[in-house]
Image (cartoon, rainbow over all chains, first blue to last red; front, side):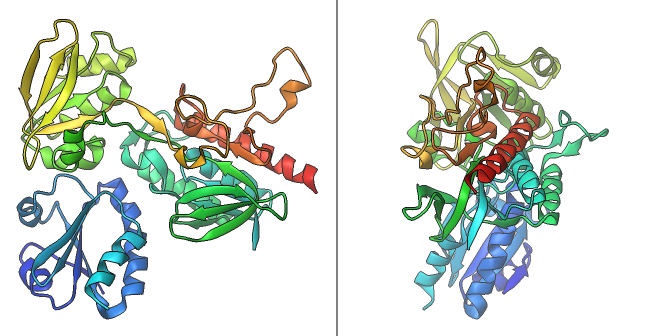
Length: 106
Length: 320
């Protein structure tokens, strides 16, 4: 499932989600973020209903980006049961991301 | 399925090569690599690529190039080549990707480009994305109202410094010499910018900071004196290295890792007609920043991409 998430929705949509959530911190001016997009779309297809991919625009949602000390995008963070499971800085391949999801859901 | 051509890399060299091979009805596959669209996707305005009267944004230019090759039937996969080997059975090649797929082709064009260099300090790696960055256009936003340093003395350093003044209150260019490789126009622009100051003859010893960058430890190149300079952002602009490591042992590389191309004897007319983009392996051609330590321009890469495509096309004709 591919969703967008804002500062005010972060608690309910990410922290309280019953499925692992991969948060993509991005912005319109970020070139490499565009490269991450099609990879996340493919990942989303493979995950089906086993996980959630949530896009968070850092321009519009500075509180969450600030809270997690984001200083470079794309940054991807995988949350599960309210915990940060993993963080990646820079564009990541589908395989790398999928492998982390696979550890959490079988 | 055997492709006529596999092109490694989707920068200006790769796209131009694909444009020519697909227009010549060669079955063409591009493997995008880790940075689809190449180095121009992390720049802003491109004013030195001809054909755009008002300039064009780097990412937009690359999207146009992509649309153009797709229009002629080029296939693009978001995968990264991890090895290239000759097929045992025929004259072709097999490319393996990090995604564990294998693709076969009669000829290969390497256009993998170059990537930003890092100093190689452990503290730099540790603070990557926590104030250390090699891409001002990607990360500058996070330094609004902060003070940053840019390491380097070339055009890239000047460009990054100027760009960062949009966000940072103060930008300090730190350079290990007192002379600059940067072009006059770029250097002057930085010198005139009131937000930019220069620290010369300073070598970076360490990036300081626990959870994020708080400063930089410098050593004076002349006196050897060590000092600390407080900063919240550490931007690298110390040059590039070719993305050719996966080809080591396959084609000949020079001491810096650039792919060595055939060097024609300019006094021999026949020799000058030899394909200029051929590598040490017959059937593998190369173009763009992965062979070019000197010019490193989008338009040069595009030109070489065209050459590689024409060389590959001719070579395929000769094989059949």
